[in-house]
Image (tube, rainbow, N blue to C red; front, side, top):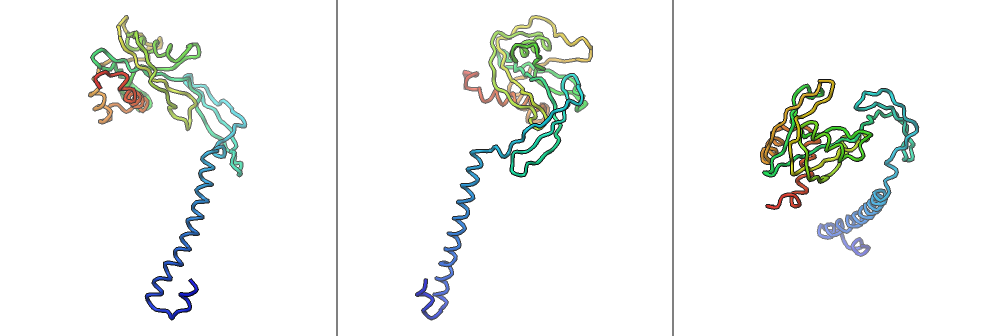
Length: 236
């Protein structure tokens, strides 16, 4: 570097000198980047600073299928921020993919007051406190809503429906070897009305693609089914 400065400055020498200085700057930037990257990776290993701790929780109202609570929390980051957050406490839910021997799925249609329209869904419902397991709830919901029982059951997966607001899980089950044992039984209030229909798997895919099946938990359930396809469908 010093010898270049002693020589008369020419265009060619300047051209050589500039990359050399730039190279030094690049090394400094690279070193800074590596330090930042190492710090970020250390944070990824310990994400406790992202979490919040609950100070208090107050139930505001009980709406039968869920309750609304106000939660006062503090962050674990150095700033120790505080805030009120509103959550829904719900029972766990179940969805059932009832699959016939010819690979058709038993779907249900019902009116949903949230969107004020009909939706095409899977049989399912809440896992009550008295249910020994979500599978017990899945068996009950399938029989009540469709009149079918199943001899073979497989848990396909579970997911959080909306972790921003809710604390519950939704379990998805595959039911096979179906047998209709009775007519569907709806709740005693008379407000529940459900129509059953069979759809082939290609029709299911088309209905999801076209938006005829728009319920996020139903779409998630069929994703779980796809993940297990090699275990379930012998012709794949």
